[in-house]
Length: 189
Image (tube, rainbow, N blue to C red; front, side, top):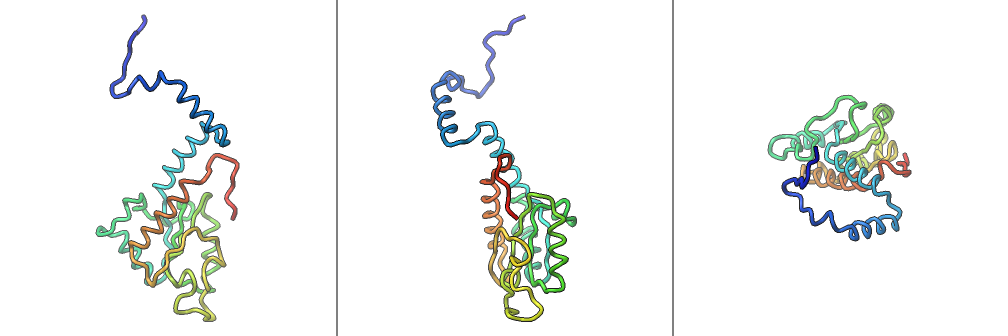
């Protein structure tokens, strides 16, 4: 039994007859060194990864309160796909460090970071996390967590407002979307 003239609604069949445009598109992609299949798979995977980052919150002071405000109903962090914060580093791919980090706490913070699965990201939230804040040049506070672990996005402020945190999360999403997930490029850590 043969079926002829099968048509699916809402698909313009005229576009499928234009092979020259498709071949021109393939030549353009191949000239730039992009594999069509891997490039499209990268786009799909990175879109899904950037819109479903699972955060692990390491909050120690007033920046943690601002994160709680960002997760509440008024600001709603759920629009970024982050409404479920993880309590285990093995389930998280984004660590949000918010607040003062003292030298006694630094090895434990690094251990939690090392337990996270790759690819992993770090967002430093607040002046105390980024540079020591008002405790600059003190003997007990780490002068920036970038001395302990690599940081992908810095969100300045004392404490930063939820809008600032959202801007930092959008910057991180942009960074994740342009990564090459299936290619040969590896993240340097």
